[in-house]
Amino acid sequence: MAANVFEEDDEVIAQINVVPFVDIVLVLLIVFMLTSSLIARASISVDLPRATSTGEAANSTLNISLDAQNQLTLNGDPTDLDTLGAAVARASWEDEDVQAVISADKRVDYGSVVQVIDVVRTNGVKTFALNIEREA
Image (tube, rainbow, N blue to C red; front, side, top):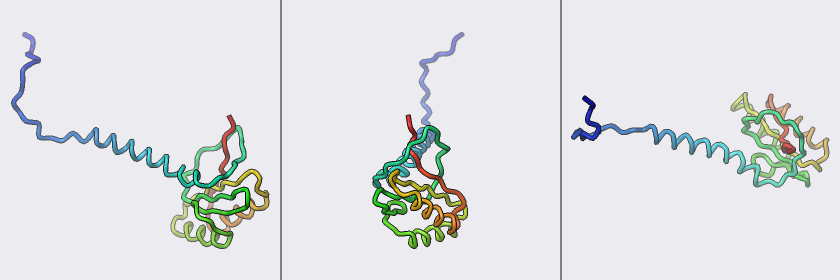
């Protein structure tokens, strides 16, 4: 007495299956999160120093870059040390857990990088990371 598999039901399914929709939205969210952090860094040409070991990626809100001509940028916008200090102070006041990622060209003077680190630390950012390119 096997059940008839080919028997058709005349009932209309009145429910919406949202699982595929949620899957698609989560994939789009992940793609957006991965590409949004690369957009700001890709617009600034910085030749990063290389290292064989890297730490874990920082979840940053402040992307600070020094290019080969010692031009300072904050999140892709040109700035100077005084304006950087004010922006960092404002960001740390709004969110005490704000993090900074400092990217410097390998030809930049070490003293310039230390000045940027000093501005970041004195204006309330507790954690920062130095961006490097991993050596293969």
